[in-house]
Image 1 (cartoon, one colour):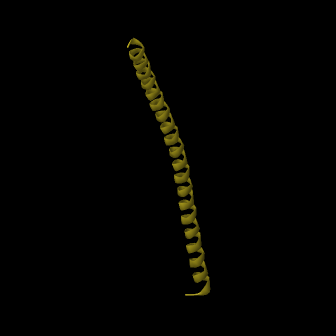
Image 2 (tube, rainbow, N blue to C red):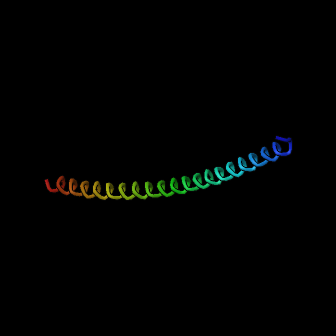
Image 3 (cartoon, rainbow, N blue to C red):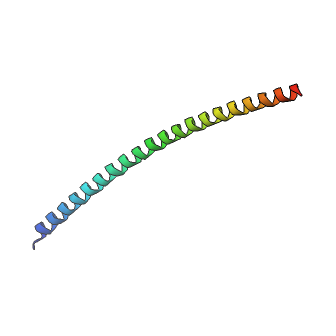
Length: 75
Protein backbone atom coordinates (compact mmCIF):
# COMPACT_ATOMS: atom_id res chain seq x y z
CA UNK A 1 0.00 0.00 0.00
CA UNK A 2 1.20 3.42 -0.74
CA UNK A 3 0.97 6.42 1.47
CA UNK A 4 -1.86 8.05 -0.59
CA UNK A 5 -4.10 5.00 -0.16
CA UNK A 6 -3.39 4.91 3.57
CA UNK A 7 -4.14 8.62 3.91
CA UNK A 8 -7.35 8.24 1.88
CA UNK A 9 -8.44 5.33 4.10
CA UNK A 10 -7.74 7.35 7.22
CA UNK A 11 -9.68 10.30 5.79
CA UNK A 12 -12.66 8.06 4.96
CA UNK A 13 -12.61 6.50 8.41
CA UNK A 14 -12.44 9.94 10.02
CA UNK A 15 -15.35 11.21 7.91
CA UNK A 16 -17.43 8.14 8.80
CA UNK A 17 -16.59 8.56 12.48
CA UNK A 18 -17.64 12.22 12.32
CA UNK A 19 -20.94 11.25 10.65
CA UNK A 20 -21.55 8.67 13.36
CA UNK A 21 -20.79 11.15 16.14
CA UNK A 22 -23.03 13.78 14.52
CA UNK A 23 -25.87 11.26 14.18
CA UNK A 24 -25.53 10.14 17.79
CA UNK A 25 -25.31 13.74 18.95
CA UNK A 26 -28.52 14.62 17.11
CA UNK A 27 -30.30 11.63 18.61
CA UNK A 28 -29.06 12.41 22.10
CA UNK A 29 -30.26 16.00 21.71
CA UNK A 30 -33.67 14.81 20.50
CA UNK A 31 -33.95 12.35 23.38
CA UNK A 32 -32.99 15.08 25.85
CA UNK A 33 -35.61 17.46 24.44
CA UNK A 34 -38.23 14.71 24.58
CA UNK A 35 -37.32 13.86 28.18
CA UNK A 36 -37.60 17.52 29.19
CA UNK A 37 -41.02 17.81 27.53
CA UNK A 38 -42.26 14.60 29.17
CA UNK A 39 -40.93 15.80 32.53
CA UNK A 40 -42.77 19.11 32.18
CA UNK A 41 -45.98 17.33 31.17
CA UNK A 42 -45.72 14.88 34.08
CA UNK A 43 -45.02 17.73 36.51
CA UNK A 44 -48.07 19.62 35.25
CA UNK A 45 -50.30 16.52 35.52
CA UNK A 46 -49.03 15.80 39.02
CA UNK A 47 -49.66 19.39 40.07
CA UNK A 48 -53.21 19.27 38.71
CA UNK A 49 -53.84 15.92 40.42
CA UNK A 50 -52.59 17.22 43.77
CA UNK A 51 -54.67 20.38 43.49
CA UNK A 52 -57.77 18.34 42.67
CA UNK A 53 -57.11 15.93 45.54
CA UNK A 54 -56.60 18.74 48.05
CA UNK A 55 -59.78 20.46 46.85
CA UNK A 56 -61.70 17.21 47.31
CA UNK A 57 -60.22 16.68 50.77
CA UNK A 58 -60.95 20.27 51.76
CA UNK A 59 -64.56 19.86 50.65
CA UNK A 60 -64.92 16.65 52.66
CA UNK A 61 -63.36 18.14 55.75
CA UNK A 62 -65.58 21.22 55.52
CA UNK A 63 -68.72 19.08 55.23
CA UNK A 64 -67.64 16.92 58.16
CA UNK A 65 -66.83 19.96 60.28
CA UNK A 66 -70.25 21.44 59.48
CA UNK A 67 -71.99 18.18 60.49
CA UNK A 68 -70.05 18.06 63.77
CA UNK A 69 -70.92 21.69 64.53
CA UNK A 70 -74.61 20.98 63.94
CA UNK A 71 -74.53 17.92 66.20
CA UNK A 72 -72.82 19.88 68.98
CA UNK A 73 -75.30 22.74 68.66
CA UNK A 74 -78.26 20.34 68.79
CA UNK A 75 -77.12 18.69 72.00
